Length: 309
Image 1 (cartoon, rainbow, N blue to C red):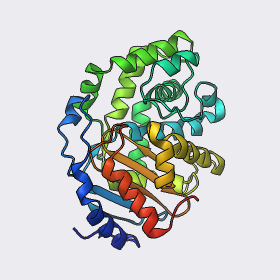
Image 2: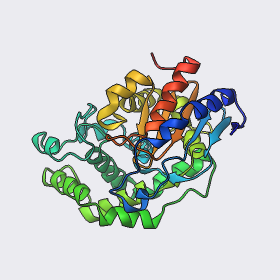
Image 3: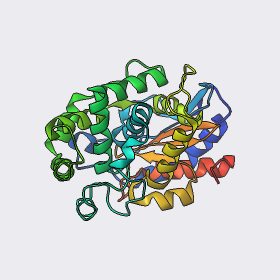
Image 4: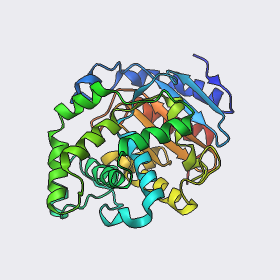
């Protein structure tokens, strides 16, 4: 399928779609969330958004999918925007080296998660956003709608309910952190907000556009400031070192860009000053990252010569 939309990356996207086709037979969808388990791993979409809002894509780039952990980037950005450095008192900035839902690491580090992109860290961020706004999930949805220009982006209640029904590990993480005083909202309320946040559906086009403020050094689509240049650098840095679970080192080695993956099969990535990207393919590797998605971003940086290194 020929890349659609406008922009200078169309030919590159066409080549990537062709070169990664065989990889879509590898991996499988997230089977521990029943409503994600039936996703077709052969689906593939990729979009690139330039700082001026020019966007192009290939494959299923307009097809909404479950964002899951991709929303953690937008939650962190909102908390930094509203509350500055305070969030780093309750969550670190180091790679975990362990599965994204590890309880063991959290306990021996006294309830302070390693980074904001593992589940425990994301719960701390959502907890703070809930305290600051009273509606963490709603504020994330609002940001995604505004930055993408798509008012149809929304929650999927059935996915939130499915995650809640199988969310014992997240509940355990939240209760453990609450026992150390690192969660301030009632745990059931926090979990409801977190599952709702993760249930948002959006397309590659939506997410590439929505992540554009990280390519514009913190500037929103309307020209207002969401993050300072320093804060945008911080988010990009943590994405690079911690954004792909315990495969962050391999991702940095192969792709060389800040990136954040989700178990819905999506990955967002940023080339500061140049573009933001989103790729989606539901087949995951054993660490929860899209097999074809990582390969597509690897090919993008190789073919274009664009990376942070």
